[in-house]
Length: 400
Ligand code: AMP
Image 1 (cartoon, rainbow, N blue to C red):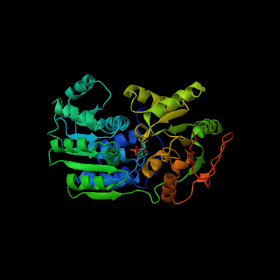
Image 2: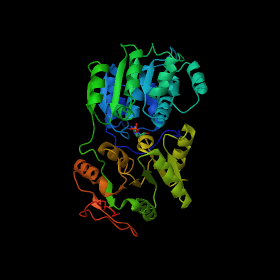
Image 3: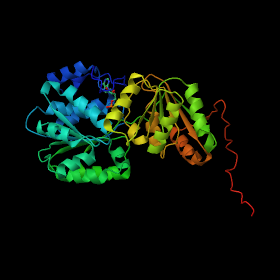
Image 4: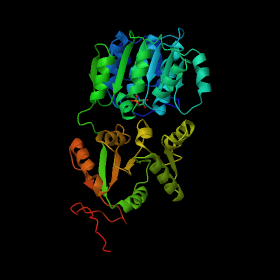
């Protein structure tokens, strides 16, 4: 595959071939050109019922090959011309752009045109893309709704709808917009919904928005990827930063650092830059262009370190990340699993280092329960470890 916008790294595949899945010769040809030899489990489970036109709800993580699982059947079904017939709603701009690139690759032999409508980019270029009569639109919910309200786009001929990363959409508070958009699309459409997890709100959305859906679940047992070494660094709050700096000196590979808030990601970026580290950052206060550039620099290796927030970092699909550092512990176990899943892709190994203070220990226990094992307590040179049996500091009242 030679499209720089599409991440390319090995994923576990099945022994089946794409010929077994009922695809036509032109689409099989485009798959060969992309370089995929065997379908992944989610692709072999989704493609045949998708070609039959069934509604589908699929549990699948980023990295399972889910994008091609819905793009390939759409490419099979649609030919260029006839206006906008398929809509893909993505939670973030990065995921939307990657999906658009997949459509162009797999839809090449059907001349499919895709427009990408995402926030943070000028409306004007998007209006031009809409005027070119795309067959498929990939969009983030807010911007799509903007276009629908301004009547710059018509969605009344949409036959195919994909909701990608529905649980992520929920985390970002997009469900009200998603519901509004769904209300504007013909009820006769077919819907495919993908989600890494099925919280009750997503189950409810699926029940109300999908018709007799086929449920596909290929989530691996245990949910945490193999090949990951988890490490925990319990330190005093003022030692979080020295611990991070020491970890960056200890492991020299490609490293993704997670901060919980945008301001902290920005702050960490400047600290690391001042220390002379080759570092880039992505979070939602940065423009689309700058985020794309930062990811490209990280992917190509000119910046060894990338600082990200959960929202911006969720879809990061860069092969060969060796080290994930949680500068802040994530807010929930799902985010921990997602962050950890950015490393140890397939046969590779990776380290997830989490820096915590005593206040985070409840969350640590929840993560350990999900992983099914305790996380090894580790220390870094020059940073005093916090002893867990120690009681949290009690405020001493000063006498007046
Ligand atoms: P996704 O889960 O859609 O984000 O895909 C993760 C990665 O797997 C991307 O880098 C794809 O290029 C790659 N990929 C998806 N399907 C296949 C396949 N059948 N064979 C080889 N690589 C694949």
